[in-house]
Amino acid sequence: MNGPDGRDIRGVRLFDGFLDAAAQAAMVSDVRDIVRAAPLIAPVTRRGQALSVRMTSAGDMGWITDRGGYRYAPRHPSGVAWPPIPASVLAVWRTVVPDARTPESCLVNWYAPDARMGLHQDRDEGDFDQPVVSISLGDDALFRIGNVARGGSTESIWLRSGDVLVMGGAARLIHHGVDRIAPGTSTLLEAPGRINLTLRVVS
Ligand SMILES: O=C(O)CCC(=O)C(=O)O
Ligand SMILES: [Fe+2]
Image 1 (cartoon, rainbow, N blue to C red):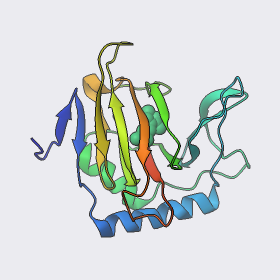
Image 2 (cartoon, rainbow, N blue to C red):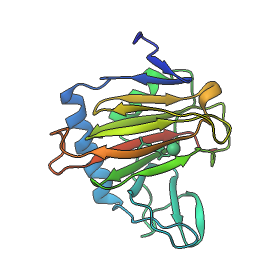
Image 3 (cartoon, rainbow, N blue to C red):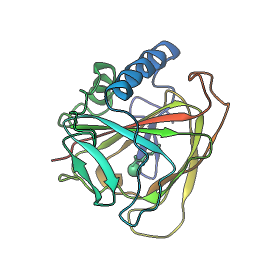
Image 4 (tube, rainbow, N blue to C red):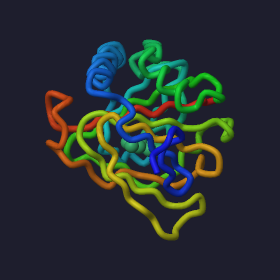
């Protein structure tokens, strides 16, 4: 059921339709401000393999990956500080995880129609008692949820614009990924694609 604590899928909590159309549009405008200050990066792994998403960040720390490996960094590669996390985004965190510490990082993932994200854990943070909160804007995404341990069965759900997902507690280190997006399922953005915002406490 979809009560005040969201719908439970393997310990992950989904608040579907959390943001109404006006709140989504306002948040997109805030994301555009972030991207203007800290332009999207085409990330590569240490081995030089390109990720299909484009990324930037807001907050004290931003997650980056390049030929030096992956890490949290205090600055955008251009040398500018990451812009602050917008109030609209912080408000979502405070509502869905009121007992958590203040997030130090808001990763902005941009999915063009052919982008995806492989199954992984979010484990570059210092305190796994703190949740991860993810906000979806734009086209639908097929989100796969596995297990904390590697392997085993998985379950996929469609994340839609305005949905908020919480990975916390026993599900904090659950494997997850985005198999694909469905271009053209939302009219929120001017071009097909999807924005995902992922909030984390880093330290
Ligand atoms: O795009 C999403 O919904 C998930 C993003 C994600 O898992 C991440 O950035 O670590
Ligand atoms: Fe993740």
